Image (cartoon, rainbow, N blue to C red; front, top):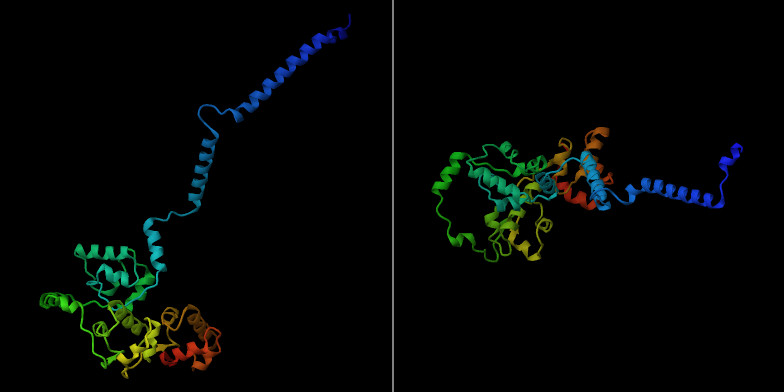
Length: 303
């Protein structure tokens, strides 16, 4: 009997061997694939998804700096448009802070500071108010008025209680003329149709402009009514000029008839060609229209 006889199987034996081989193969495949279809313990596909999401979040937080609630409020505050008017940081209340265009939480911080005995002795102290950005401080700086401490105490002692009638000032009769360049908010509130907010806006816009040159400029700050003109006159007070050859970018762009792009065009012109000598040179810049130059001309100084 040769060696070949060891590899000879009957048909029944061959079928048995094939069956056992198939079962063995299925067992091996099952052991390899079982972890993918039948996770151990309580770990499910949903758990895997949660773990993957958690890991992805951690990786994202490593790349993205943490932004606190206060910082988010701070960034929102910077995007708000300010409506400044003359104010004293030692006396203004939270409602006045909101009227300035600042968020209410800054007003709350201000009153909390004063309740603890804090007082602003100089304008620079106001810059340290929590939540106030550098840009906001610089925009409000020209409107800040800080009364001497002894004067503030004397005023508080000698000022009589405010009568109810004084909260609602009597309106002027028709034919009264108010100097638009000299009137304070109290006088402006005597004009029918003008309240506290409108009066403050008129005064604040006058500060920004450097003075009104026409009563029609009120249309740029309040809802314009042609009958409003009859209440005002304009005195020959000197208009505060914008020194176009000396002022920096920030000062130039703060004027109501300017913006960042106009100011930057002026700065670039000065660097390349020197000082401007007349408004005709501004007319060559594409940033200015004829109407804008007409409005801006009374406020420019080329010295």
